[in-house]
Length: 520
RNA sequence: CGGGGCGUGGCGCAGUCCGGUUAGCGCACCUGCUUUGGGAGCAGGGGGCCGCAGGUUCGAAUCCUGCCGCCCCGACCA
Image 1 (cartoon, chains in turn cyan, brown):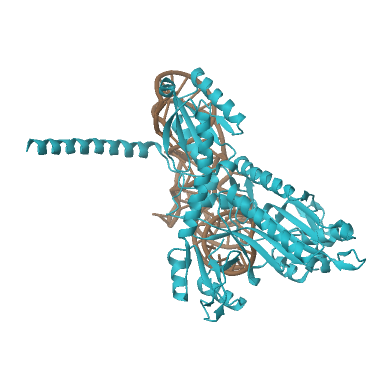
Image 2 (cartoon, rainbow, N blue to C red):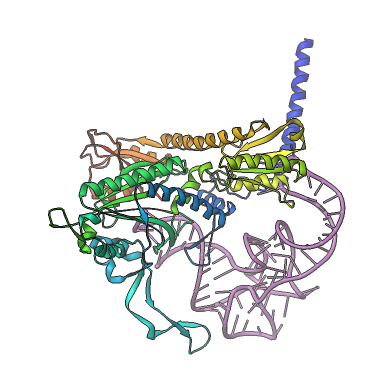
């Protein structure tokens, strides 16, 4: 009896303590944790814009559809660019630069290519402005009309193949493996920060080869490189596959793609590599003399990834507290926050840690801003996606430890100062891996095989993600599916197995499954 | 191009329906003091042709007409 009473009292005490903790907690929350990010569950689009904004990635400019990439966002792009550029060069490519302007007539040389891009081109018609004779401001000088209008490049195949014509004469000039980093303009009707802007930054590789086989091999190689980059650096798992005829690049014989799945269950085409056959060689009359002194058209590829990848990066890992960046692409990998403010003692320890981390190639910052308090800094670095935060205060120094907070799981632990550098470098590796594994798990949960159209629709509506289904191989069916479900054929995966089946829509025979999804 | 929304100090908004002191509030900024282990408090201070152009009126951020711009949702696309 006494025992039971004791227990009851004990419970009561516990309950009271718990209550107090709760109130204290929620009071604190209400008072200090000003949430600036709309939760994903509430409004995914708004969440995305909030993360971009508060992560200091980019903002809308005063020009419709165009964004300003801010230093933090640009630093991430620069890291991506640096790694990709290295991978291109390691596989024998060199960089060059071709003009922003393309004569209008060039674009029409390759029939399908025009068809694909004509509707979204910005066109330069004049080369001079003048004061408005009727008042203030400037007008386009009607006397300064261009003889041939210039198109702002939506992609550079035409201007590049016009140039290659003069560069390629013999089989000795092949293969020609060139890449350019550039901006392009596509006048889209609807834009979204990073994912689809009127002007965007990208790289475009354009290669010329002596044989079909070699060109196909090149296109596939670049797909592999993109996939490797996405997975190892962005921690963004991708499906490698080939596009259906309908989704193919305008002017290509085959388009190889990497497709990623975003947290809202929509697919993102993250990079494409095209086997162009001899289409552009024929359109621009690019021939070479083979070893038998016979003229032949060259075989071509083109491949590109853009600042859209940054959007993919954000939507793969970030959460309701802001950006989450994979350590390999984070401009700052570790931040040290003095608690409550910088002091000589903390500074000494911070300098020591920084020196050792930098020696190991880790980018680290010591946040000495005296005007911001620790809590503010915590929130700010979380919004910016800094993978690891070290908190050092007087209590830590006394115990010879530091507080380690990881951004991906938001776990906080105290670690001994001794060996902290190894701990942190290991932790960065672990975070990189965890982000990738987490994204793979998410994609697996959101990839569903279906065998009839009712299930197909139900899966798309209820859980989204990739739907793996049989398809009869016709564009007609593909379009019908799109009309009925808004889902598009993302790709025929490279690792698809041969499997007899029936088309999910028409019931006609099919030899394998392909992936469908609603897409960005 | 259709549908919706918005335009007011650097940023975010209220005020507009129903016209009437000196156009408010929060954040940020400047000064000072007190603070500092999860977005500090107090006091004082600076900053506005209310998107543009006409009109109605004694009087317009507010009403009317026209224009411009941006965002969101769709159709087109990376």
